[in-house]
Amino acid sequence: MTKRYAGIDLGSNSCKLLICDGNGKVLCMKNYPTRLAEGLYEKNLITQEAFERGQQCFFEYRQLLDQYNVEANDMRAITTAACRMADNGKDFVQKIYQESGIKLEIIDGIEEAILNLKGAIEHVRGKSEFVVVYDLGGGSTEVTLATNDDNPEIIYSVSIPWGARNSSEAFNLIEYNEENASKLKNEVNNYMDDFLDKSGLDKRSSVCFIATSSSPLRLVSMIRNFGEYDRQKADGLVMTKDEMDEAIAKLLRSKREELAANPYIGDKRSYIFIAACVIFKTIYERLGLSEVTASLKSAKDGIVASLIERDKNGKVD
Image 1 (cartoon, rainbow, N blue to C red):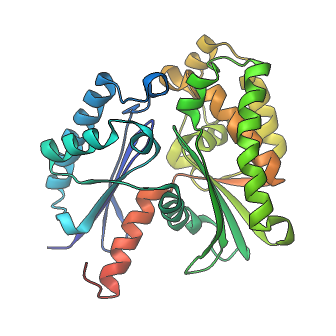
Image 2: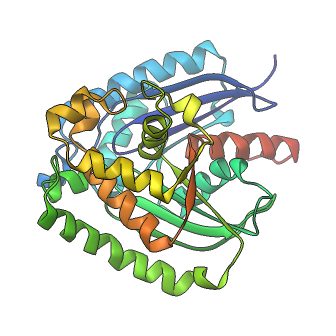
């Protein structure tokens, strides 16, 4: 039987599953809205409701892994900011393992950046000497400068402890408020100061910029006027700074109900999308980019690529 490989990436807002064959052909791709960090900011705990959404997600993913005959050694499941931050994050991981047999690894920001880089770089490989990847999650945002080649090396990476979900709650940004947005922008810029100071980005003339997560994919769908959010169609497309500025300015003037009715955002995302826009815009302005590639490929793709590469190189864990 042909080997099947799987990567699972449980973030603060959603859980992504990718199953591929040995050639990297996609056999199954799912995105489950676990909203694990919803309510986390108040007590630093994963809520009971989020626990239950996570359990249901992994019940369904266990069935898919069995359906595609994915062996335990040919899959990897990671979890990021929500479980890193929550006091009961390890309890959640243990519960998932007891119920599904899926072992979740709580990884740090550097490992998260490495996996995102390995997945997203496919869009721009060979187009520049260097690449900057930034991944705007629900509970953190990773910004990474790396070489752009077959074996990319990270030059510098920073993990910003603010994402769309936790910053929306912490800074009360369900709808745009200039004072609250400025506070979030200042928080993000503190970390961007560190990134720009230590990465030496300003000394590197040949750089491509990639943004992963659903926020840039939704913006691309909106800018290209797809009529609805289409992450597959948006994957790998380029947005200019002027296009992003115009789209985000329109969104920041919207009420929550208008965001919910927006075919590119929807009800669930309407509570966190303003904060996502503030973070996203703050970062691309500080990076000084003129355009960015939106990428659906991220950590889950990096996991699968690493597993396939492991077997091609004859390595055994």
